[in-house]
Image (cartoon, rainbow, N blue to C red; front, side, top):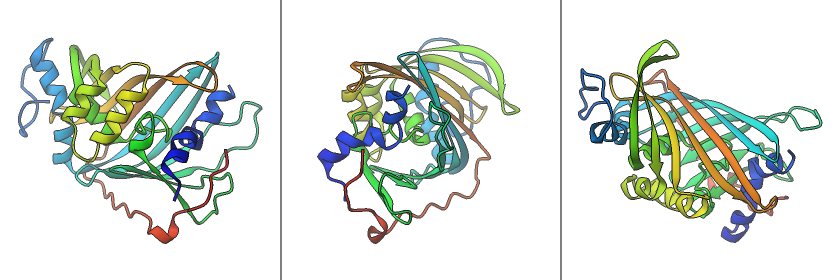
Length: 276
């Protein structure tokens, strides 16, 4: 098992660091009939989005993470399924080409669980049949960024920390009519209101990011379910001595889709040192 201290030092390198260096309504019955404007009602609607996903049970998800630093912009994409009641998910994450246009990376399979991130096809000396396990509470970003995809349930729980929000208007996401909200969440507030499984990671992010304020755009359907959310994070890149801006987008659809996620047995987890 990767040691806690080693995990802190190398976790960002698991998916991201090399890229950066290189260059609803208030009840279960659905949303209110009237579109919501600004104020406490809007904030309250957003803070209940995670609960609406729990009632939905599961969904398919696509993710996109854009990072910009030193004039270089990279995008990591993912696709998979998520079980909101168990807070477990499976994503296939595709890294972009190397800056020099080198060969395509093999997709990384990620399993998401409360307190843990499991990755396969990690490379860097990890056997092909082994998983790498990372303690998300030990990551300075709480795995909101490290894995190249924000945990879909964590993305929803971040909205529990909504401090300000404005109703923008009606629009469509993947053919579904939704309400568009724009605002700012606070990581510390989100951590206090989060579920037991997500709270340690969100607390870690609150300590590790450059600011606890997280601007967002959220899109909810008439059942209060989160269909799309875009967060903008900012963290300090120790290697470059600068700030990295990250925009993470999660799209949820096909609610109720099968999401059977089996976590690796301990014998299948790599216990050796991970190469930088």
